Length: 518
Image (cartoon, rainbow, N blue to C red):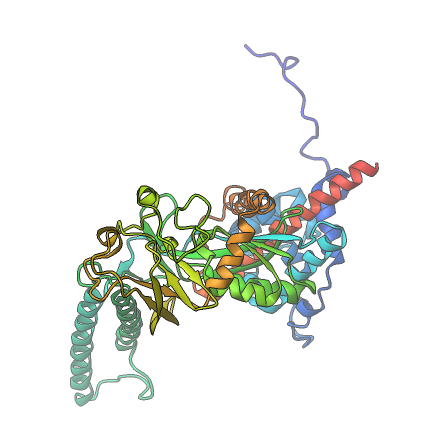
């Protein structure tokens, strides 16, 4: 039998009236600094979106709705219904929005409404961090990741299945049309003559959706043909729910409709200085535009740009040099390096036979391109036997949708060469050839930079700078799958998350500074 004196008494009775929300929030609670940061933002562009008609209920200031969305991401709350619940029952949210009752519909519409204003908010937060010395743009790291689209991995179709589906819908449409024509002749009421009846309109809407998906599937199959992939054996899969997404390999294995969000992170304190979302596998095309957007937002370009091996194309290197940005990525020189027997003082002399086994091989087992020495003055290569390889012709080469002109250099002394079996492939009919693209020189300069000890030490920081950002956004903020559909809305959702990420870092930095000075 329990006794009443044994159990702890309630600290506050249910009948107590709370004097104010302010007394429930600790003076050191991060939500107070969060609110101070929101007060420093200029909200005029947001407020200009509202029409001042004087009719209806006054709107909630956008500053409070945006603050609730960002603070929700800070606390791992992403859905609009959970945000509505937090504003009703959580004291920190109630304090932040000053006890305004914001419903989930308001949050949902607001989240996708302010595209341009959200970019300005992202810029303002970044400028605040820069004024505090937290963003310096000395070195930035660019990377991309995978985030699942709001589309089931099983809700995808191939061109073949879409054609079958469209054929079935065409037959259904004809049947309904015939049925309605018969009813019309019988003087039945068919509704307005200016629009299709509801049943027929629904079929027509489904047909149009299948047509769009079929066009995408055929375009994807054609792209596979150009990549030497047989679409008959391995057809492209098109997402049906979020048609802007693309089936890509997942980080954890398998395939599913995904997007490729990118982030460029400053190396000083880890603030995101640029973000974007792509509906394609490779993020290499977003590297240079990222630098240009950083200059537009912060008034200057980053000094050093770090990225991974997937973004080390010659075009990117050339564009970075044009922009005056030092580029750091793993780059292999096509010229002989130390340790390669092909590196010799006089390239017209042959490599000693004893050194032949040390000559690098390519993936096909033949002598690698790095075994051939280029002479810029004579515009020709020299093979390991010292034979000259003059310019022969040019040929086009498709790279990522762009056509690059290659210069072809051919050796005319391959007949009877003792290295022929290791140098020539079965397709070589007129001697060994070596190609040279327009980016060889910039590639050599980048490779020379990456070979220095200082460059290697700096590049070792890239995973910490770039990949930590995605780890926090996925694990802490819960952003492993987008809630919205369509590329433009997904871009907006990603920018909300990146802005919240920066606000969190700014709040914590201000808290640390105040603690130190206190």
